[in-house]
Image (cartoon, rainbow, N blue to C red; front, side, top):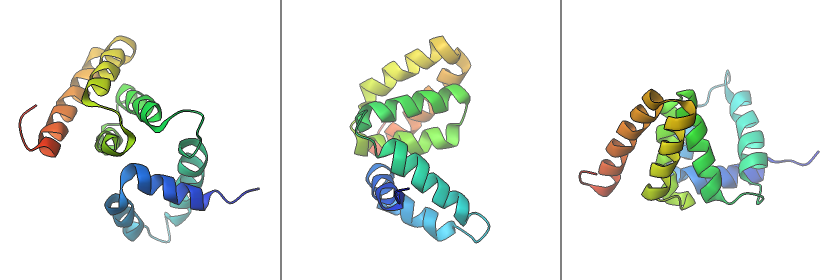
Length: 127
C-alpha cells in the first residue's frame, strides 16, 4: 500500500495554506494525531491529490456539501481556500444557489451570510 502522507501533506498545504496547516499541526495532540494522519492520508493524499477532478471543481463540490450538511466551520475554512483553488466569487454564488434548491434555503442563506463576511474580510471592503 503506497504511503499517501507526503502527497496529502503537499496537497493540504497547497489548498489550505501553510499558516493553517502549521497551526493545525501545532494543535495536534497524542489523542488526535492518528485522526490527523487519517485525514491527511485519505482526504488529502487520496481524494484531493487526485487529478481526476481539477482543484477548482473539487473545491466547489466540497463547499456545496459542507453548506448543504450545515458544516459551517469547515465551510468557512474551504471558502478561504478558494484563493488557492481558483474558484471565483461568481462560482461560489452559483454553488450556493444550487445548495438552496437541493439542500434548503436556510442552509444556503447562512452560507451566503458567511461568504459575504469572508469576502469582505479578504477584500477589505463590503461585498
